[in-house]
Image (cartoon, rainbow, N blue to C red; front, side):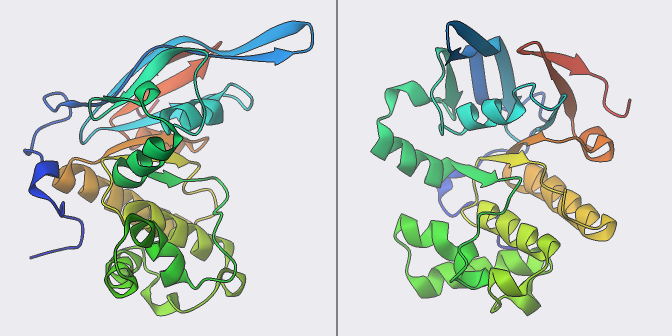
Length: 250
């Protein structure tokens, strides 16, 4: 039975493996980001290393200002590192120009931002379908796919409503649907459950579990939510510009 999350192309299908056996989906080596602050440079990320395998869910925790959002921006190709590099699905992002990087993000990466960034003039289904329309799919096909995902996040009854008619939690669910609609290989999430009630957050967690198992989607989740972090395969703490392995559940 097609649940709406299977890979559309055979080239993207992956064998069912545990995260420990699966191919490396995300690989960062020596990742450094330095900003010029007047006469003094500020190094936010310092020769950071990170590997995430297909189907693996990794939580990143850390204090405010530790560089978590900076890291997500680098992983998603929204910013360029000062040193080091990011490789996703075997493709070094440093070798892509801006146009190619945009196409790569659309094909391989889903983003869930702390703030939903929905287009106010579009309905929920139109917002969720937008990445597919950008890819070149017809509006009808894109919205059919978007409706499948909206149903999975409990938003199908509100699909024709615009963001101004939705609650904060509903808008966040639409944003999550938008991130998943392209069937990405890697999903980057910044506080994805921050605006959700406990029941809805549990639904989203279950959906992430299904995606990781069914389509080998990898997740990197920045969060302050201890419960959300403990639910993932690994928990890493960002401190002094580096990632430190934590024990999930502690």
